[in-house]
Length: 140
Image (cartoon, rainbow, N blue to C red):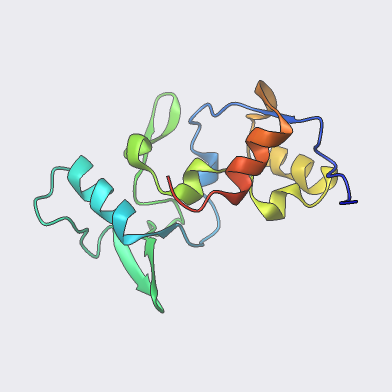
């Protein structure tokens, strides 16, 4: 019998678009060629691609670029905090936050995420099946 996951009763999360997950320490926002095309179309580009201001190659993969302070290039700050300029077409990595394997290792790792993300443990209840679907999603 498979070991029951600690989050089998579900978890609460509802994105407030505060922008906290899009800022801070440098890292990678992995994106596929299809996602790049979607973002490009959303931005009104006719070539189906993004320029070096928005996209960087890392080995054989692509990542969105960051501003010098570590913020995602598409994070726009305003009176209400940070908003994603491409929210409707954001990459899968962004869509599945915070239901990532590393955040779901234990209740402690999940609750540690609360320090950065005020939406964790608030809002919409996601049952185990919804969490597993997001956790294992490979495309959207």
